[in-house]
Length: 310
Image (cartoon, rainbow, N blue to C red; front, side, top):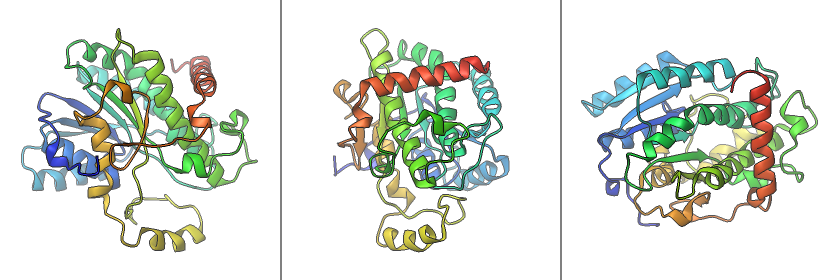
């Protein structure tokens, strides 16, 4: 699929899509292309001002683009639940959920619920958001062409490069300080791949028909105003060297677009991990472990259920 081009995406008029972190970087580029093809797109973000600025820019370049703000702070599970509830009040369909937002290699910190900030922002917040929206996604499957209702988790090849050798270290997800910030980031990205795998196993059958994919977006030029994506001075020195000659977000989002809306995605791709553009990638051994994906799902379910979020 190396010849993929966003212009080849189908008409998306009537489709409702959520992009977390849809106001900047890859998220904004993804939102822009989906709106260009007629989709109604919600940018799920904690910053109203940043989203409104992004909407103003987008609609200036694309008059009539159907884009909206959905308040959502993935680092606060109460906000995530409110966000899903607000969306369910506003919409009766959801065709595509793109779990794109994330933080990278930030210093150790804890969320209001006591989880390590990278693990919650990159994975657990998205798990809760997805679970709360799952009934709507499944009901949308019943009234939509086969294979068009999808969940896309934006992961990274760092799921294989940086995750600890134990895979998911559950004790490190909450008040755990043993792992480095890089290992915690890799673990959160591994969780993204496992999340899509388990979604496909549970809801990708003929009865439910939901597609769930994960992806590595590739190397792209990041937005220096985007926030604390790099947590060390060394990363801030190395990143420009790594990104030299890399495409900007406008092309960096192509793999996300392919996973979200390309008609070339087939039923056999369900649960798969993709590298740019639309190529089946080799996920790590841990990412292919069905026991681990089930254990992560059950752990997440129990944690959120016990805390009253599910």
